[in-house]
Amino acid sequence: MNIFLRELKVHRKSLFFWCLGMFFMIWTGMAKYTGLQASGDAASKMLDQFPDSVKRIIGLEGLDINTAVGFYGVLFIYLAIMAAIHAVLLGSSLIAKEERDKTVEFLLAKPTSRTHVITEKLLAGFVSILLLNVFTLVVSLVTVTKQNNDNPPIRVAVMLMIGMFIIQLLFLALGAFTGAVLKKPKRAGSLASSVMMFTFFIYIVVGINEKLNFLKFFSPFKYFEGSQIIINGNLNVGYVLLSGFVIILLTWGTFYFFNKKDLAI
Amino acid sequence: MNIFWHELRTHRESLIIWALSLTSVSLLFIALYPAYTKDVQAIQEVFNNYPPALIKAFSIDLDIFFSFFGFYSYALSFVVMAGAIQSLNLGISMIAKESTDKTVDFLLSKPISRAKVITQKLLAALTVLAVTNGIFLTATYIAARLATDTLNTKIFLILSSSLFLVQLIFLALGMVISVTVKKVKNVVALSLPIVFGFYIVGAFESIFDTKVLQYLSPLKYFDPHYEIAHSAFELQFLAIALGLTIVGIIASYVLFNKKDISATI
Image 1 (tube, one colour):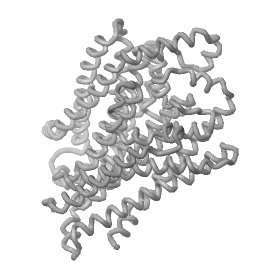
Image 2: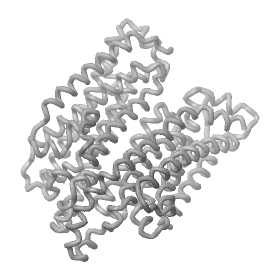
Image 3: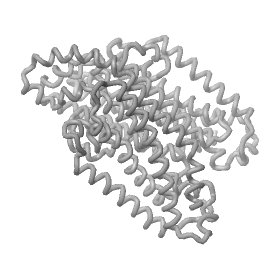
Image 4: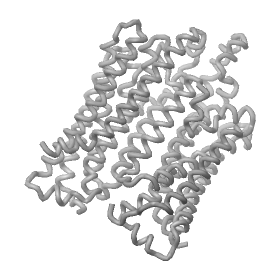
């Protein structure tokens, strides 16, 4: 268990700052909500009249931003992006850092299999993203409840956070996979983040032009879109299964390729 | 000048990837423009019926918002964000790379002053940015001419030059980070959160129209609404941008000269 505990300890400070960032984001976001409420309905009625493509550009489609929950839905994509960045960087650095820091030889000379090492590292990653997710859930619930006449939208919040958690798992696995596969592990972080940015980009582009809806499959941000989850009150089972499949595939790939790899010592 | 050529050679592959990526992003958006204009006509009918006072309250100049330039500036916001990551990477890795690659004592034991080292690396970085922008501008200009009948070249250039100017700011920022922080093991883990952080702050500024936030995010220094309306830069932001860049670069020279660099990290 020492690898697991060590990784957690090393990531402690970083996780703290990420949580701080999340808190700041949610807090200032919902603070804007009180401002919007104060200015009256005129602004939001205007926004409602916009055509769908323009609304999607601003991030408003399908949501009633006059409600605290609807407003939070606009915020959700930004929280998901933050969580995704955290997860992808965490995943890639967990695997790639040994070769980067020249500690591979030391680590693998120990009487522990490569599989065991990866397992403990991925477990540490899992716990880190879980902690970030739960923290986000709690802060979101507290701030939204205050604006929502003290009526905590527990079910919606939990649904949204489960969606975010699946996104995190996807990118954690992706980061780990690139770290395990690449011959030059230093590139893992940038490669995995580029893939993540690309999926974010597809999310935007699909929003602008409905004809590109088939591209939805390429972007996890579209699988668990804030507005869809809030409106439907549920996660799309198909997307959950698809994500699960990809996560399992990438995780298996991480183990497989790391075991086979000629590590650079 | 050999440091200059060496840096260019090292960054060649990365330069090509970034230039192609940025250009494809803007070309993709411009390709989506025709679909966007169809929606727009519908909404303009609606707005024609609103009293002008109410429209003013919303502070979005509708003519601009729905024109080619309005759409282009939306695309540009993503290009600028990505470009910021590119130049922040360039800036941070400038000095930090030597330390992580353990080439710093070799380099500094050569009969060349530290200032000259930075100058050559800086020139190489500026060349990379200039080439990237050149490729981007040419391709985008051609696409823009094809996409819309009347193109005000001056406004187009003012809008597009925001890419280069923002990249300058982030290059200087990266250089300052590079000479202050002791150990930069993972450049991407530093640059991605910084740029995305600024992007989210800027996004809040757009949605919730809080002028103050514009000063907080370099990505927002070149506000397209103003530039389109006045066919000019917002002078105070141009000054701040250039000022920050120059101060940052000078600070890097000074700090690097004084810095205690250990051959073993």
